[in-house]
Image (tube, rainbow, N blue to C red; front, side, top):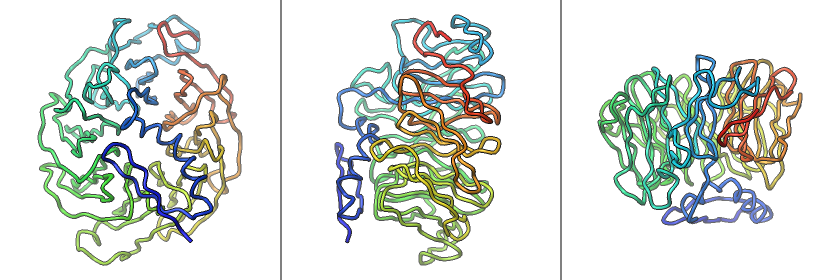
Length: 408
């Protein structure tokens, strides 16, 4: 028997279909996950930031100090005083802030793009995306939402010369990557927390809390088709070989075929499937090795056949009241997943068996997806530390606090 739970923040309602026995437990699980929902109901929010590994031995992050930062891993390993060796912080003044963020920066074509929940970290300021020179942190341009009551949750997505920015004003904006000028905008029926996915055919996929996934022309924003689920879609869809993979608050993970959807075929068609869960799929699935690796908010981790949805293995990490909101990462021979219990878990991607775990000290929940260069994992935890973890062993190579000055 299943019960319907409606979680409402502002004018946003998430519909969750849960078993009665698990309903209260699951909603308690969702509360730490929807620290993000505090973005819609609390007077202040701190975000959970994230870190991205660049291609030039540089890490880019937005931390609890509300600054966008470039860090040199070599300098951090030595414990050098920040800034050193090409490092920078934006804004450079100690008493100014870029703002809170719920996403790691994106680096493309020598530019760092960072989505900001509220400019300057000030309640009542609009969300924005800021573009900085990756070499020195100087601002190239800034686009802020037209309404002060609107904010940005999802990451900026950069494809070719366009930045796609989702927002709580129900709208996705396509911006010129060089200038920030608006090329087009597409309005959905509710807030858009997810990032945009663009395929090789030039179709952009937009997931909305209005329960729908939209396909639009990436060049013009013209709608092609839409697919409706039974609950809000808060995650960025994953795309692979003509298939989209995403979870909904109706408790299902969907695999849909873009050709079948364009032809308005009945669901499921052409190998489509839906995988049910008694919890909720929050994070974007990882599609690799013909497998969809998915995490659930109560700590469940599953590997399913990407073609059929048949489960290969299942396990659990974290705790029921400190689950998972991050996408798994493949690094070397491990599937690495951070959890809100302040630990990073390394699993065997073939079996789900645990290889090692790393615990933050002091304990700091990790909400954002890890970044990796293949041999090292980088994480940002809510204890305001950036972590460098050796993939093979789970050993900490160095940790660094993100307040000024950064200390090893």
